[in-house]
Image (tube, rainbow, N blue to C red):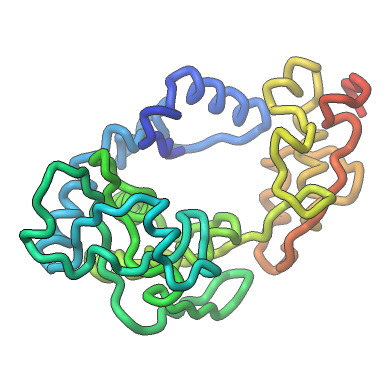
Length: 286
């Protein structure tokens, strides 16, 4: 259990404690984490800054970093390929890549970007098979340290996964393009790459991501209503073919059923059942 709490404005101790309680209620457990310790701690990213600074020094010594003074608004206005936008915004157009030392002086805060080399990045995914990306074209140079001095997501997860000897990464398919960028960092830092598996998304019936706007209850609300966790686990498992509709099952009992080959390779649209909706009947044992 690693807690990615790098953003100080959105990370609070009470949120962390509540999330760990909710996951335990659901039936999940972990061998290492902020509450149980382990050989690869600390397990809070907010306490791992020196590891990220060391990685940045290594990249800087190779000439792989440059200071960027652009705002998101400026990047969006200048981007040559806005259609390439992802979770981090439009593709970076290279505005600050070749600034002179004179151009870089001043009081304006700067982020650090990784100089993305030309060429294709290919990897094999456990569900989607062979994947090929052109990061230099599709996303451009990406941020590895934010303007406030905090390590960016792409750098932090690479450093942490390598330091914690993570062999397999399983995450949502909307991070497929991030994998190409992270592979570039693994190579630049001389770190071993893990195996990758990206699972399709679970979407609302209208094709949008599930969110509070979908009207679904949170885990905490379901707990307070007396819902059995095995019911929720069974419903989730049924959406991806690991359980039959209506089956009641715990996460531990699902272990023997799991395998990437059993999962769908397309996003799944689901209608939120009444017992899971905030405006539905208070059915404690659907």
